[in-house]
Image 1 (tube, helix red, strand yellow):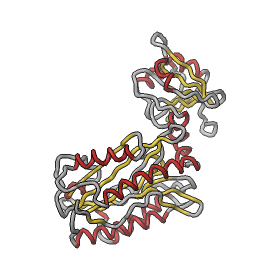
Image 2 (cartoon, rainbow, N blue to C red):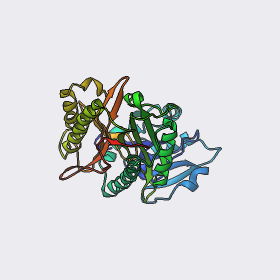
Image 3 (tube, helix red, strand yellow):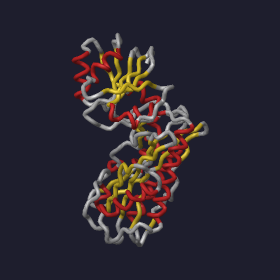
Image 4 (cartoon, rainbow, N blue to C red):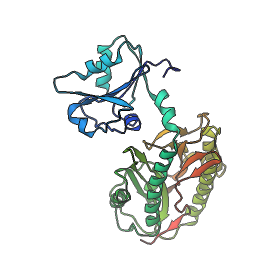
Length: 356
C-alpha cells in the first residue's frame, strides 16, 4: 500500500474479503466492508445479523457490527479518517461506491487489483495443498467419465451437466462453479451452455467443469479441468485434430517456470496449433490463474510479459474449434515450483472412446 501511495483499502463482496479474513460476505443490500488503513488496525464493518457468521480473527481485524438504524457509510467514513487515497474492491456494489464518494468527496479512489492481485497470485504452501486437493477431486470425476461410469448416449447435455455437478459436490466441493457439457457441433462453442441436445453415438463430448472446495480455514479454492471423449469410434479427422491439440497442451504444461514471461506459455501452445494450420480456430488465451476464483492472475495470454513466480497456479487449456463439426479443448492446472511447472490435474489426456 505504501509503495503505491494508498492510505486505505476497502474490501466488500468478492474474493478478496474471504481470502484475507475467512469470511465470505453475502451480496446483500446491507453493506459489509473491511477497512484496512495503512497505519492502523483493520475493522470489519458488518450487519449485526451477519455477525454470527464471522469467525473472530482478533489478530487480523476488529468486528464493528451495525444495526438497522445505523448508517454504515458514516461508520466506514469515520474509520477511513484523514486518508486521501483509497483502494476499493472491484466487486463493491456501485451504490456503495457512489455513497462513499458523496460522503467523502476528498477521497481519491482506485481499485485494489494492483494491491491484492499480486498477493493472491502467489500461493503459499497451504494454498497449494488446497488446490491439489480440489484438483484430485475433479481428476476422480474425470476418471469416472472416461471409464463410462457417467452415462452419455441418449441423455441431454443438461442432464449430464447436472450429473457432473452432483459428483463435484459428492467429491467434497461446497459449490459447483460450472459444468460445461457440449456435444457434437456444440463443442465448437468454447463457452457453450448445456441444453436439450441429446448426445448421440460417435460424436465428441467436451466436458469442462470445476467447483470450490473449502480449506481448513473455510476459504474456498477452485478446481478446473477439461477433457473430451468420443461416444464410440473417432473419425480420422477427430484423431488428427486432437493429436495436434494434445501436443500443444503438453508443450504449454512444461513451458512455465520461475522468471518465464506468462505469454511464453501461450506462445508454446499457440505456435504448434498455428503451424498445423488451425490457428484461426484457437481464438482464446491459453490460460488463467486459479485460486479463490476460477479466473484470476496470472493470465496466460500474449502481451503479458509478467514473469511467473514460484507459487503461481494457472490453467493451460488450448482449444481447436471447428464450426459445424466439433471442438476440442484440453485443460490442466499447473503450479510453478522452483524446478518448473508441475501439473496438479493428471487425468488421462488421450482421446478416450466411451460406449456409455
